[in-house]
Length: 196
Image (cartoon, rainbow, N blue to C red; front, side, top):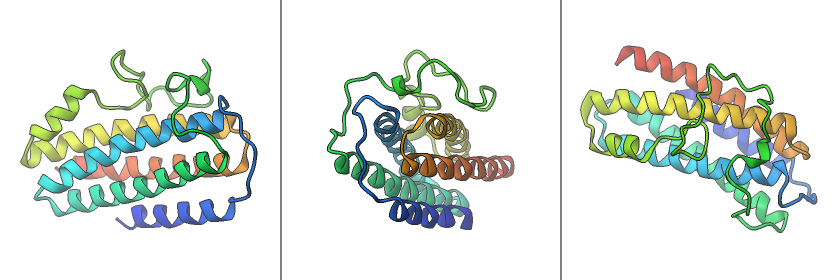
């Protein structure tokens, strides 16, 4: 699971290398991405911690731990961006509004459309989260990998949009790295799922 550890180190370096202050509009794509991706990551962390605390599969537990720690760290970086830009953590716009109506290079086959009851692409519904909390054993492991693959696909779609729309190099670079890392994690999760 070294891909997850290397991902965390790469994001730490990107955050440090692109730390110059810059004015960012409150309703722009940079702020929208930072806010929405924090919310997206929060759900991934919740799912990862849920399965890590209940799974007896050491590989699942390791993957879940890596996802939780990496995405918590990334969320902290995005929180700090908004703070540094003098912007609130919560915006006035609806989730994903910063993306506009175009696909911005998103792969609609790998990133499923957002369901009416979910605010962002790839997000699990409340019912799916409850099913994960209630599941156990191999059923929980399989459900976790299924949900996380879809979640990452939604994250890749958001990151791809940010690469194309963001006004700051910091956000574009971060989003490009995130898309690459999550695509790699999708492949690793698919391989893991096939072994369950």
